[in-house]
Image (cartoon, rainbow, N blue to C red; front, side, top):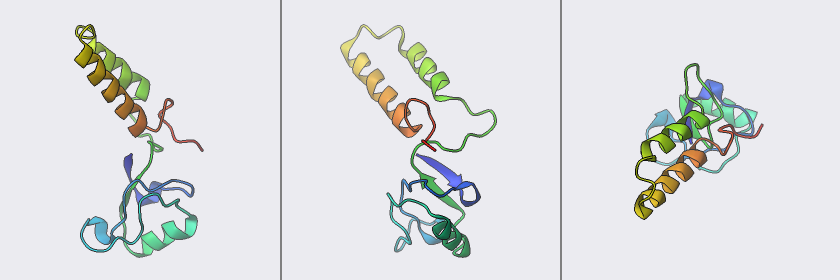
Length: 112
């Protein structure tokens, strides 16, 4: 999941969280999570002054941002001395799965 400015959204992205007016999670959502964005929906959010949305995966890469491969290498390095312990193996696998899912899969990018 990634929080991105509305101006970087594109049709086809999937909302990972409900969207609220003024980016405040209080009140009635104006659009629910799981909704596929369309150009008209993005324009409607813009008219409602929605500034940011949470989308599935990690579709927008900023300069200097680390790739999923770099993050997974760091994870392996952090656990390298303790991977003989069963609970640490389990914890490593949970962290790896979470990173992979939150970054949009093995490639770290959402399918276009």
